[in-house]
Length: 446
Image (cartoon, rainbow, N blue to C red; front, side, top):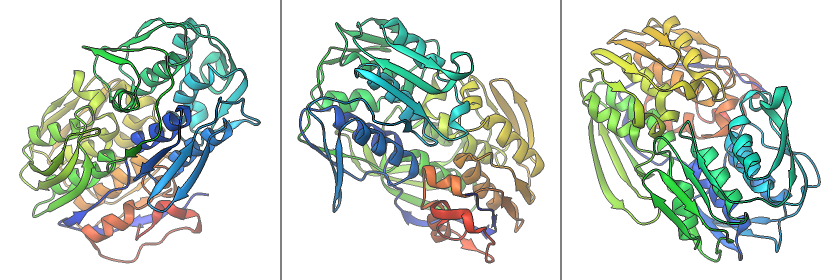
């Protein structure tokens, strides 16, 4: 169900907080543990709808997942089994694409589907390389979009050269390679997030990295250990960007993931003039630490090339921060934004222009002139959680103006506690109206 909400807060942002577990790491922790040779424990698993879809999927292929206090325990089956029913991935593109790789190796018939948004997201780029390995996959709409039907069987390892850097496609191929005949190599044009490589290596997989190429040898991951999930920097980014741009702000996010393949947003904030510092850094496994951002006058910058895959999910809220920076901010090479939960370039461009921002949209990005005072606006989120959260942040720069969101339940797919944290760091200036359908996605005061 949908739930509308009216956002009205004032800054500055102040305080320390923690964000829930990293979504990308949480997906992989569940799925890789289901492939392992013995049970694993996961600490800090994100409790959100997208990760719930992966949990149901691994249970459908034979794993047992149970909660034990601070841990989630995953008991893998002796052999993965054919799902007894259609596997519904909800809104989670990560679940669907990684499962394409796994289920291509499971004998039998599997069907992957999702909600209305996911059924419009492209799958050809993961299907085609899997087909070259010998997999049998078919999709709707001229083999373009889900549902995906998979006839699992034997695969052969091979070398793939991706045209677009994609952690999801890379991970799907590496997972298929674990059960293929011979080595599998995936080469990207730029580095995408490397959670899969780190976790598989930590679980005993023979994995080699040579520049932008990753190679795996066949083998089942070793279980029996504990996977630590750090806080999600993509979730923290909403508050970090707001604090950087809002005068008088200073916030600290504790135990947040600092994986270099994910910290492009920090590079951008520093390039724009924000003040950042890191304490209590831990570099083993998934790097993490306590990150403090202090407001400073921001200026425009250019975001393009190899930097883009390292911050693709943070670009919507970076666009908000850019409206408050002096000069011109240019984003290029980000065409991937057009095939997320919504066309995020169009969604954010429409919302920010209506709020008074000066934006020029390109096919692969945009240019934003600032600083620009923003005004209240009604936002069509297109059921996209990052659009909803980014525009809730934009409201802080509206001088008391309101943002009306036509949907906040979508926030529950990745960050159910977003509004609660935003309330703690800011000052709600009035009660917000919200529909009954807001659900977990609107905890706190929308």
